[in-house]
Length: 168
Image (cartoon, rainbow, N blue to C red):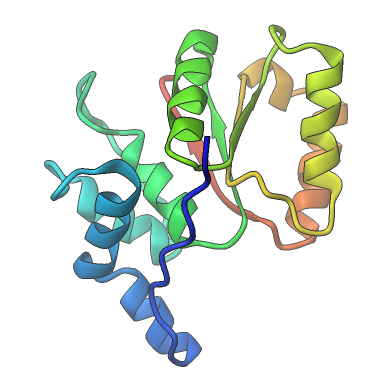
């Protein structure tokens, strides 16, 4: 599985980058490049632009409506890690597998992972420059003191760009 190179969104000054980062054209480029879709559906674009502007967003969509894209595109557009909290282990496994097939660095932590696999993910998160862009976790894990401590460290290093609650 080959990683796709990052799709550059802007090479100008910081404020201009933020405006360009949220532009429909830039976001559609990311969508096409990584997922192969020609355009967003329903309210996806508005939700993504809201998230990228730093505001909170509540996104209610039917099953199959494309909720996941509303945090996956920001994960590709922003620096840092997007933490996705989901109680559905099978969904996490499927999404991570599909993202990895597209060359996107994603991982999940759940009771189904071996200790060795968990250690590798934690090593990446503790590294100076983690490669993980999306990290899926269960609500049970996020409530543990050990994971909360790791999350605080990631946040204090400026690496936690977004928290998404999915299917809760």
